[in-house]
Amino acid sequence: MIINDKIIAREIQGDTVLLNKESGDYFSLNTVGTDIYNCICKGMETEDIVSFLLDKYDVGYDTLKNDVISLVSELKEKNIIINNQKNKPKL
View 1 (tube, rainbow, N blue to C red):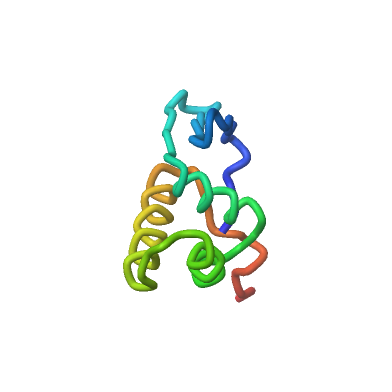
View 2 (cartoon, rainbow, N blue to C red; view 1 turned 90 degrees about the vertical axis):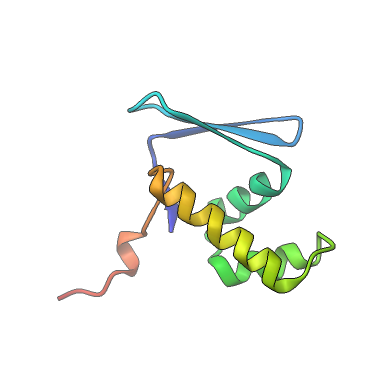
């Protein structure tokens, strides 16, 4: 998964505001959401994000994994992140 190139992100006091240049829609992330977004920007996949954030936050694995999956699904639904075309198998 990668960030849609139509997205502009600005971090403000630990939170992040995402703007879709094409649609004009915006989305706000809290501090944890910002950490997840930054991990996606670095090319990390869901399991890597969960492992990385477990060291940072005092939360259980299952809770964190569900939260990451939920946010990733929402970001995909809003076309903020898209599937990396390079990872798709050729037919």
